[in-house]
Length: 523
Image (tube, rainbow, N blue to C red; front, side):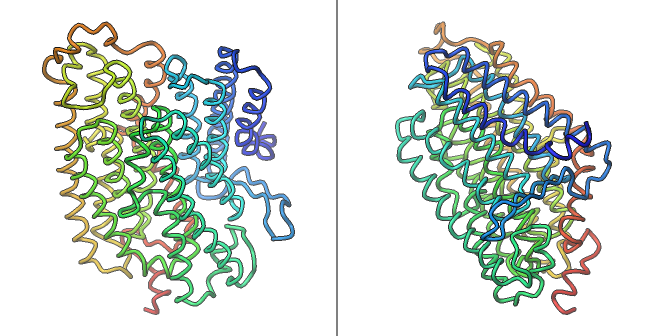
């Protein structure tokens, strides 16, 4: 079994969803139940493969190195190869994807949006899964770019066809912003290929091959990646597409967008931009940190101004991803570990919040918080789950959200030695204030939606009921993981820490050292 996983362990779960979508294409549209079964069976099979990979990964006990590496010829004319591999950084994000997608299928079982077309909707979901898993597994820049772009069209159609009233505007805005960033990212990849000592797209070789690039050139190349990945995160001020996309997207689209797609940008910084161009990263880091803390405060203030529940959760993503980017900007092992944990925690918590928002919309036919209230009276279990997720999102100790925020703030106290301590300690104070604002807007949201008595227009509405079986099945794994990772964060930190040190070639300082950056700066 070990040899089989080494040869096919990444390729099968990556492309199995595409095969499932192709099978569904051959089946008539009106056989809805069969389409649901095929989608569920496919995504569960992918999740089982992920579990087998995790077991083998633990047996190998080599979290810092790439496991299950596949290196085959692909496009020889441009020196691009089919290289796949996974380490302690990419494995948690890949497993998060393999968990979220089947839960979305389960939730959709009785919650398909209009126009009613389960076949097309589920096929797009499967194509999205291939793109997301492939992005986290790719070790060649062109292969990474292909998978990175695969997710664009399915999400565009998911928003544009099944979204709300302003779905076309939101879909086009999402498409154009992401496409613009991707174009600059591709230019940066090509620049790396031509400027590096050895012309290659192999991400394993580029950190050494790119070491000879002039610092001024590195700064420009990093800038292209910064825009490409920063728009995907999205960082302030590139965030404007996100609230519109989240607000108009169907529930499952919002969950996928928040739980996984935003992580493609932050993962790009950790996997590509920083380890390949460490000198440029040191130059850009104060600017990235500044935009991160602006995003934290701006996102929180934006939440306080919202009346729509989904839009509030969308703006909270801007703030939470600000904490992730702040951890990355410190250029320390500690900060990068906090960032990866923050990616996973945000995926679990905000994915859950969008599931809940979708269920509230289905029952009340509105997300206007001024019309909501009394959820704890009419649907008490849903109300308590919403309260649990709000506590996790504001960073309550003992839940996963705490370990996504507190270590990032702590890492800002001791950034890499090549960075100015005073600057990042100022960022630390601003980020800490952001946690207070987060508590404010989340508790205000909880008060408006869950507390009090039901509004007169909904008091006797038979559509308002508690969670259903399919909702419980979709939500339970996320709720359990939010609690387990909050109580025992070493489950994740133990995997990411060796990979952060190894993947970044020791060019990120730990809490006490910064030798690589010191050498790069000529100290």
